[in-house]
Image (cartoon, rainbow, N blue to C red; front, side):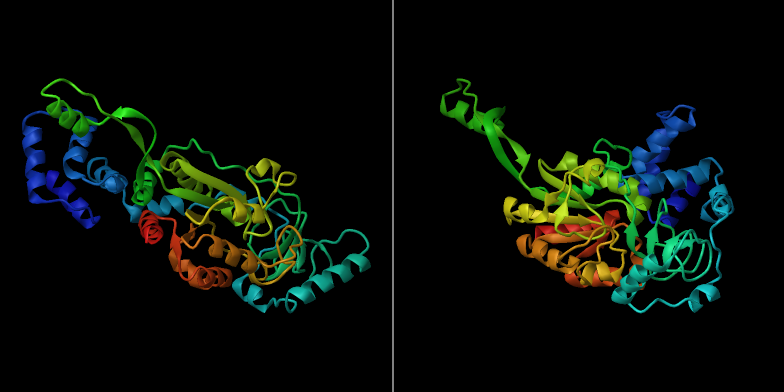
Length: 394
């Protein structure tokens, strides 16, 4: 059984040596784990795992070996069950890939908005289905619960295909929880790569080496020396995308936010939606009436701040390139203009993307943001965080 555990760890990419294997056998023979599987688990984890970031992987291997749980292949059948929610939207239009391929966009942003204005003036009453009028469950680019590769969403409680280039709804976003602790430990380890310590404040901490030297100079009479506490001197400006497609990534973003609050003494954070424009906000619940001019940020925080932007960058390309294309309001200047201003103010900057990196090449807006960031976009994974922190330290 021990051999199965070691082999399972090796297959999972966990570093384990013969020395650690023999140590585990010796500890078990010494009855350090008793006769409970839980006690043996903690003993094996202490001996075999040397990196906290690998604990979750070890847990999965241990469960497969000692609890008879199926691996990914066996679990596939369990997760293949369709959620009941998928069957509830009876008004939702279901199209095959071939049907979707035959649906064409109206011809660009300007044409889309001109057509919407005209149809608002022409339409009389409610319309359901079809491909022209503003309504529900149709192929029209205007309305709700339908499909069009490029449209304006009106009166729908949430995104579905993530294809709307404009949303005419007052949507409410939730703040990220700064007290989330589950899963933050590994993120904290990655963020610590950015720390730079400096002594600040009153001298309240014992200087052991200084005390020894001063006592020796005083011929043995105790001479206590005190120094200020060491604090992380790194300054971080964190901009967090909220709402829309980011609803799928709330958990990992909350864990990142909680870990950053714990690791950085000098942390300022603001929210935005999809792309940064002329305003940001501190509270998603008051984002409609308590916005902060982005220009104020540019004149408040110095160039010594590290800029970390968190967002999936999945949006309409118009939102980045065109004035007036922000999904929820009319913006005088494009998202690209504001993003360039941010990068000019804080050259040490990275973008963290929660979407799997393999999917990035298939979304045009992600490619546009990556080019604006000069390639400094990293996946919101432990490896991605390590690489991003190394970039910010340069």
